[in-house]
Image 1: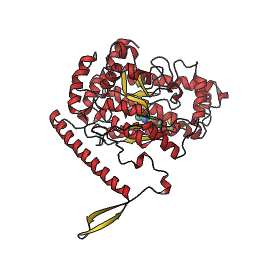
Image 2: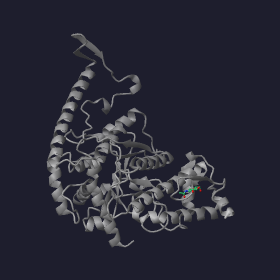
Image 3: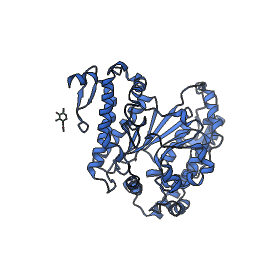
Image 4: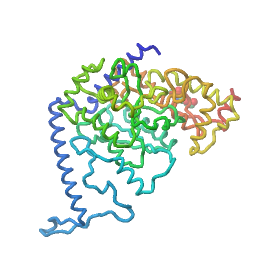
Length: 463
Ligand SMILES: *[C@@H]1O[C@H](CO)[C@@H](O)[C@H](O)[C@H]1NC(C)=O
């Protein structure tokens, strides 16, 4: 793939980003939004104060409050019961989930470790738990069939997570009124860390990203000692200081204090801090080589934060380049038929591997490992896919297509986006349907056909 064409195509996400606010129906003047945000924030702070006061009272055992017909009513209040286990940070009324204007959470590593111990969940050599977090807007999608597409994107994540023993948290709320569109991920990722102390990792995956390799598992051992994993192009990031040097649409972040502080720093560049956010818009435009907007987006903020803080943050950050931790859809979709054909040919030629059709879905990962062994070195390219070769890409990311709003970047035709998305989703579905004995009649056909019992060997005989 030529560097120039990639640079041109990747620029698309610039417009994708700047469009994003529009489809959330926030075409309000900046000042109005900021004012409303501030008031809402104050209301939140106030509400938090009330909640803390109430919890403090709950701690004393009961609350007296005026009610009923003019009398005082004693309210029985819940206290942690024996089935709740020992008290932990959850019982601390000072605990704050706030992404903006809130207290910073401290000593999270100790709190989390204590919670794990109190629940008997500390196990040596246990696989690290991953919670995948994704989400889309609160309102119905304005685009034609936008909601149907979002359902298919969600179904794709449900499939991947079921096959890999990953829990999926799908969010459709803006947890902070100002953190909308592409900024909305920060509050939910932070909240997910606190709500899932059992998870070592939180894996953010944009709603418009499709898992196109149901076999590939995250190489977590490779990320030991790192806290933040993101896909990137080192030359574009380090040398050209391009805001497209990293892709913020998919990232893996360790559930630890470092990450909370990192997300906090990142969030402080966003619209929850209107004055700083406005200044950041100009700073990012000056500091990065190719930003064409005065409004700071999450990705340019991330690039700047990591670039300028590399001495401090770099040793905990892993820029993934080896496989398609997220792959640009234009580099992927036209290859998918060829990928499917190559995998099928390998499986047909190697009947001894036992990659037969009928097996419990629960055993998927064993079959995935066998298939990986069969295709490695035969089908060129890295496991998890890459810019070269014919391996299945782990994630195909439809940047610029905007399936929910339909407001795709004008440099793409409707057909290229729509067919590309349907092709990738069906490519993934076929990998899942196979355990049930079916596959799509054709890449862009929603009908299915039954597979012979020993597909793909039988398929070879029939041909
Ligand atoms: C889809 O496949 C089915 C079954 O092979 C076929 O009958 C149908 O005509 C196909 N639809 C399209 C739109 O090609």
